[in-house]
Length: 112
Image 1 (cartoon, rainbow, N blue to C red):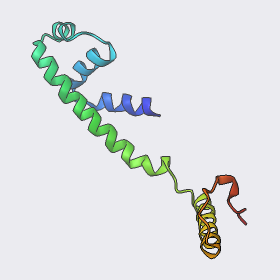
Image 2 (cartoon, helix red, strand yellow; image 1 turned 135 degrees about the vertical axis):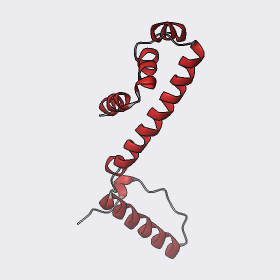
Image 3 (cartoon, helix red, strand yellow; image 1 turned 180 degrees about the horizontal axis):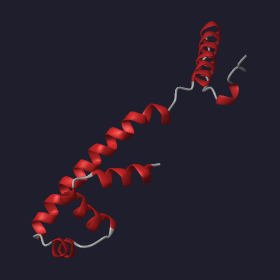
């Protein structure tokens, strides 16, 4: 999935940035090699690479942020079980005057 997002985002870059990013980051050319291939100065290659990467970063973050909730759904049942376990331990320890023992997931009450 991430490979597809990266590819689509790279291809959506304006040509002046895409060419530099592709040569430097994908083809792994040096700054001097990319400058020669594109008939640019090394300084210009560095500027375009910096700007291209910034555009990529922003675009990728925007796309990932839009789907982040799907990647980490709320686990309601597990949360309810853990809450019930904690409340059970709190009630038992306060009525008995005992220190709380650390609960383990295996101690969680069975869900209905």
